Length: 130
Image (cartoon, rainbow, N blue to C red):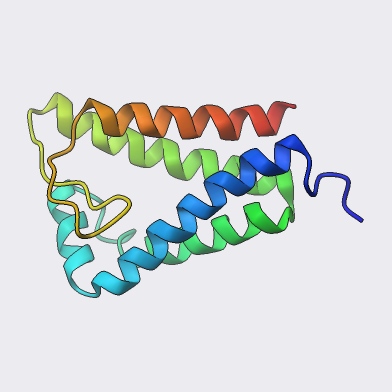
């Protein structure tokens, strides 16, 4: 049995995995609404169709505890990229709604989105270096 499974590292990874899966499923439920929201947020057009799949795959792998280091690094890169996009939008004074975790959200992006992502990044980094 994988030593990593059900350890503190796994719990940290799995928690973020559940969030990733939820976010990916919400994007599929939104259908064409989510790509329009992502475009408004400034996400690169080439990435938009892949995001829900990436979130669900990474989330599933985090929960399954497979290829742990590689999946943690990929998750950190993905979440860091998204956090940078949010920070750029905020720095530009642009505050579109963040459909990050649910397409139903109409709240404009703000510092709380950055803080949330930084907390998730801290959890992922902690799981990676433990």
